[in-house]
Image (cartoon, rainbow, N blue to C red):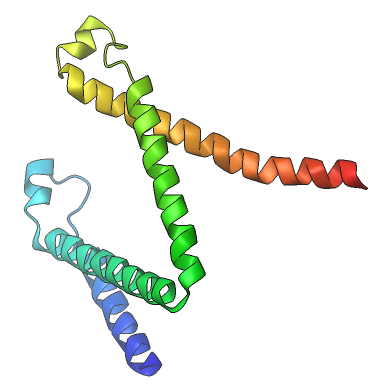
Length: 143
């Protein structure tokens, strides 16, 4: 199986290299470059590889969770915590925190969803940095 996968990846890499040299030059107008078959094929390969990566990562994650009951419990806590962060982020997003010029291009619900996404990013960043800094500080003062 490992040899077959290596061969498939080498073939895909060679196809990608050939398609790279078939891409249009930079002087070609954008409208014409978008219609290039090589670019479409490269996007197709990218989508296939991304889809395979997602499927394999989900399958092996679920397999690992089902083989370990404690893993399911931890995963449920993490998923619940993430949903809590999403709910808090949605409540904190106002939906009116942009100027009138930007508001003319989108509606209030879109601005609220963008604000929610930014709040999720900020909260998860704070949690990640805190989970790195707090143990280090505890370890520094415990010695």
